[in-house]
Image (cartoon, rainbow, N blue to C red; front, side, top):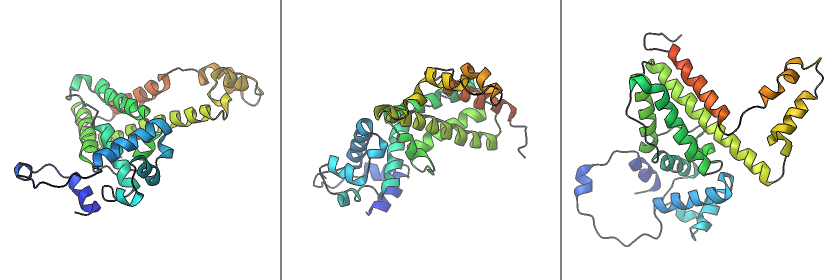
Length: 247
């Protein structure tokens, strides 16, 4: 079975008859897909997603880059495996029409927390067309929650895309800021007090609102802005009930 066939096989549901059939004894393979993913996550956790290349991964596995292609097709395939592993840790709740807002929020928070464990990994989720079963399991759970809450199917489908995009972008921005802190680049950007001083020092005639509301523009700690934006997006779905026709 070549790498592309292996990738296609990962996207299929298990076949009970095949699983039940006795397996032939094989020589133990030195590297498995699970080891590849584990090692890749280890590299990202310590060095960041940008440091993960096929060559760097091969070095961490003490093998040659060419041998990796017996397990993954390319970097994009590896990215999908990484995101799928994180999605495997998510537990979408059973849909409750009375609590759909909090339920969809909880899935987004779970995903956020997984992304933040591995600096920059959310970049791997951008522009990805998910086909892995674990990734699809999460989107299936989110779709079930929104539809149970009365959100129109088309609105629910697009809302999931928007929510996942926002979570990925939010986590990616945090990883970029953290990286700049390590390299002492543009410290003032992440220093709220300094940023506020710079805004209030602007010419009030040219920037009347910016200078007046500098405190509001720079307010927020921890995940305050994440929580605000998530609530804004989810509350907006209340106007996209199943009886509303999208234009």
